[in-house]
Image (cartoon, rainbow, N blue to C red; front, side, top):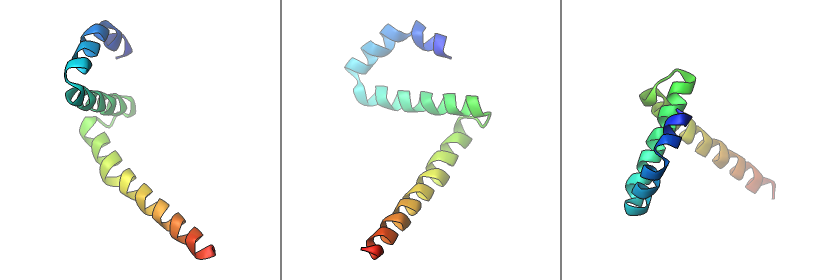
Amino acid sequence: MYEQLLAYHDTIREFAMNEPINALFAACVLILEVIGEWTGMGYQLANIVIFIVLQPALILLFLYLWLREKRRR
């Protein structure tokens, strides 16, 4: 996968300069695809695990820690 990125370096850079929002989206999708391939979950399951499970869990964890610290003071 890394070799493919190197092969398209100039194309990616030009795309990022002309359409930064689309380039950011494409980069995020690529990261999810790499995570999905690396873990064996696939893109869709990696997306669900990150944004439906981990992100809300982290938000709740940090809310709990913040409230606990706020009560101590």
